[in-house]
Each structure stands twice: as C-alpha cells, then as structure tokens.
Amino acid sequence: MGALEQVDPEVAAVIRHEEGRQQAVLEMIPSENYASAAVIEAVGSVLTNKYAEGYPGARYYHGNRFVDDVENLARDRAKALFGYEHANVQPHSGTQANMAVYLGLLNPGDTVMGLKLDAGGHLTHGSPVNASGLLYHFVSYGVDRESHLVDYDEMLALAKEHRPKIIVVGATAYPRVWDFQRARAIADEVDAVLMADMAHLAGLIVGGAHPSPLGFAPVMTTSTHKTLRGPRGGMVLSDRRYRLRIDRGVFPGSQGGPMMHVIAGKAVMLKEAATPEFRAHAVQIVANAKALAAALIDAGIVLISGGTDNHLVLVDVRPLGLNGVQAADALEAAGIVVNSNPIPFDTLPPREGGGIRFGTPAITSRGMGEAEMKVIGQGMARILQAPADEGVRDQVAKTVRELTARFPAPGVPVR
Ligand code: DSN
Image (tube, rainbow, N blue to C red):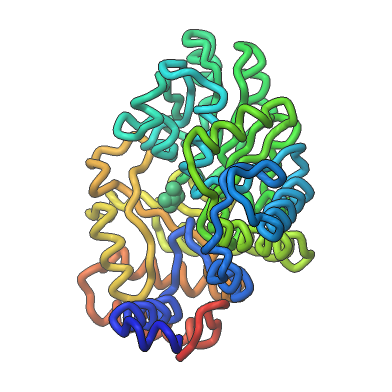
C-alpha cells in the first residue's frame, strides 16, 4: 500500500485494521464473502478513470475500445454461466438491478408482489420506506406460520385479487428452496412476469446447489458480491424480449456512467465461477450450512423453518430471552459476526429483531468443512445460552482464533 500510505496514512490505517479484522473473525453474515485477489486487482485498476455511458458499441463518450471489450466479456460470461439470453452487468448493486427492472417493465403506481420483509423479503420488494414501495403498489405474500415455508396458496390468492404485473420471488432471509415452477404457474394465471431476485442464491445456482429460475423466471436479478464472490455490484439476466426495456431501465433510467473497473471485476468473478472448483465450493456451502444447523438444533437452539436447504440459518433468539441485537453482540464479542434480523411473525421491532441471520459462504471460502461447522455451531449455542458468561466467551474466542489461523481468509492480506 505504498502510495496510499504516503498520501493518506489515516485511510491506509483503516484499511489495514479492516484487513486484520477480516482475518481475525468468523464472518458469518450470509451476504458477505471474500472476493479473490484477482477480482480486487481488477477493481483497483485504472478502468475507474473511464466514462462509458451507454453500452458496448453504442456509447455517449469516446475512447471505449478496451472497456467495450471488458463489458462484452462480462456479458458473454454471465449469459454462458446462467443460460439467459441477455445480461446487463452495469447495475451498481442488487438494489439498482431490481429498481432498473421495475423502471423498465412498469409504470409508477403499477401493482407488484413480493415477499414480506419479516418473512425474509428485501427492502426493494416493496418496503414502504424504499423507493420500490413509494413508486409502485406492492402487495406482499408471506410464509406459513407453522412451517415458515413460502405460502404459495396465499401468493395465488393475492395474485388473483390484485393482478400484479410482476411477481418477485427471492429473499434476503429465507433458508429454504424456492419452487420456481409453482411461482411461474401463478404468474401465468394472472399474466404477470415472474422475476427471480437471486442475490443470495446466484452462487449456489451456478453449482447446482439450488435450482435455477431459468425457464421459469424470464427475468433474474442478482448482486455479485455474495455467494458469487465478486466485487460489489449487481446484474440483470433476462430473456431477449425484455432486453431493450431492461437496458433502458438501467441506463439512462436509473444510472449514469457504468463503473468499468467493477465490471472488470465482475468479468473476473464470472470466469472464476465457471470452474469445477467453484461448483464444488457451492455444494460445500450448503453441506456446511446443514452441518451448522444440525449442531445448533442438537444444542437446543430454535431454527426458523427447523433447518436450512441453502447457505443461511435463521435463529429465533426470543426463547433465549434475547433480541437479535443482544444475541449478535454476544457472538461478536467472541469473534463470530452475524446480523440481527426480523423473523416471520416477529413480535419485536425491526431495529432489534427477534432473530439472528448467519450462514456459511465466507467461512466455506476459507476452506472450512463440516467438522469445523460442528465446532462453530456448538460454540455459538454455548454463547447464545449464556451470553453474559465471560468464561464461555473466552473459550469460544480461543476456538475462533485457532480456526481463523488455520483457515486464512482468501484475498485478504496478512500483514
Ligand atoms: N444487505 C443485503 C443482505 O444482507 O442480504 C441485501 O441487500
């Protein structure tokens, strides 16, 4: 970090400290991961200097010979990886990807359906404090009170009543598999477009560790930095028939110049994700989550939906006398980083949350397997059951130090 150290030692120090933190903790927020050193190198390149409003071959600025190449690489690799006919790799985030689809396919005030926030839906699935909920008329379906599985009967009944133009499937906090075939049948019944927000699941889909929405949802959005292990950003994949409207929804609809350095990082990520090693990694993420869930259940912890089919686990911490923030604070004190989260039919305000959400993408990227998950799950349960016990905290923190030393975080310098 030669130049930065010289020019701005304060920022250099922050980055060094964050590198140390990332190496030292078990990062279990299920939407976080480690981009590879190659991805970080691309994002840190001089492509950040280039303005390229428009699309390859049709830009509003000159000098795009090389950035056109990198955007075409990213688009072609995205199409090949997910099987869709069209890819837009410019969205700055998953949120931007979702908003661009709405902008391209809807008029303000149109009706859309998405999963309720406390059932695991995302802010862009119609939260009243988000632009999605302010600009469009969202109707929310939920999960069953007992099983915590998506209530497709409710989805159908609401769809028939409200005739949405888009039905969004996908979530930020849903531990089970989506039934795309059933959702498509519901969308067809009311002539809606099925849109799959696969921000959390895209990397699993690549590895066959979660079904693909291809063939059921003509539009798929994703962020690129979660299970895909790319740079911060988003993408939209779609059937050819939506290409122009979605491209216009991204630019000029909701964004100006694309971040060409980030698009270069996405291209690198898409190459890495197309390898057999990545597919095996995706399968391991799910195997690890199941092992983690089993360890927690064995220790008496209550899991939303009783387990997991994917990369994440949601725990109801209310039976432990805690709210989500208190539980996450206790775990972080031992070096285990999770986030507080609302849970279905939550009785606590969203700021506290009745649950915690965590998962295995980042710790699987470190190379950990099911044996380590058992140890981690047991440690987490001990802390959740005795959050004020300093002896327990110190013992678990020691285990965390041993694990993080044995399994270094990839792409994060050790100084
Ligand atoms: N913040 C992301 C997550 O954690 O799931 C969603 O945008």
